[in-house]
Image 1: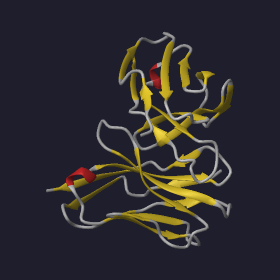
Image 2 (image 1 turned 180 degrees about the horizontal axis):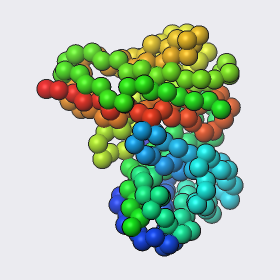
Image 3 (image 1 turned 45 degrees about the vertical axis):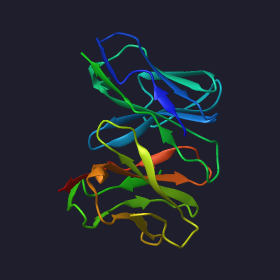
Image 4 (image 1 turned 90 degrees about the vertical axis):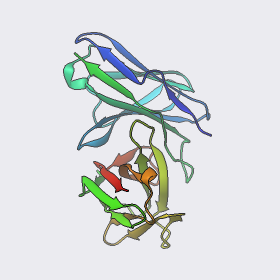
Length: 114
Length: 114
């Protein structure tokens, strides 16, 4: 079974703090993704990575950065957390291309910024 | 850019009955994939069913089937013999054939009444 693990289920941070959300996958997937999930908006892509040290912006990258130093790990960084970044964050991974390019998701991290 | 629309924010169904969740999408591409994902309360999102656009036959997975109408750009999910465990948020998603990222709809929350 594919396993995508997000390090925290719940996080509470203060405005201005630097926040790290970690994601690890065990299926040797090339692609990794960070989404933000908000009611009525579905999932919106923040960043994705198709290889180590490679990244591409998604639809809403402002206020976020990412790091992929190892194939299995993809980190989302909030440089200076703000209250409008309170949300559910989902990590996903997949093979690069083709019919097997199904995304597998982690359990999510619910972040509250006070 | 492709968009995915789920026009039903909430649906309910009686246990053992059948329910259909709607999804439409907008694209100018001819080759793509469509997905339905299920997100149970406080649990991670899992793939329910997948359809490849070049296949005319509708995909089925046990009690789950789709009605794929390519010309109408419609991709509905039918759940037969609904069970309490089917209660979840359901997301419709689109992926281009050669791209890595997916577009999600806003989701439909399904309630199953005993």
